[in-house]
Length: 111
Image (cartoon, rainbow, N blue to C red; front, side, top):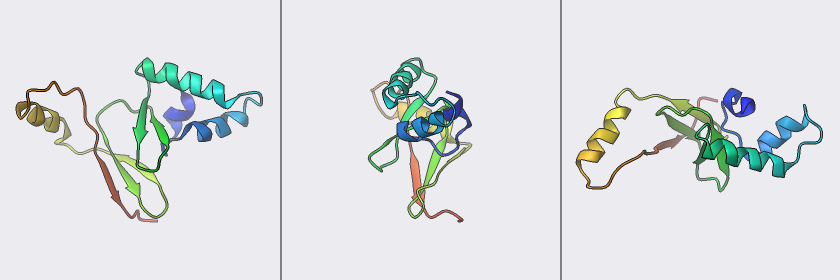
């Protein structure tokens, strides 16, 4: 959990495993996946799809958006003040119960 929380690049299971191997030599990738499932089901982390075919993990549970750089692949978080209104406005326009939403922005970063 600490690796995901302290990471600003939304790591994949493999990246989490690589980080853990530096500290815990006997950690298996299967163990990492089991813990990811427990943390996800417990609502402590979220799985994110950024269009690269990999699952990324995010410990920020508040509403926020992501910027994904099309050149270097960097993923960064940012807030938009009106984002909480988005769910309320969407709920007014549908009979479905909205429980959340995602929005990603794509472009080229400053690097």
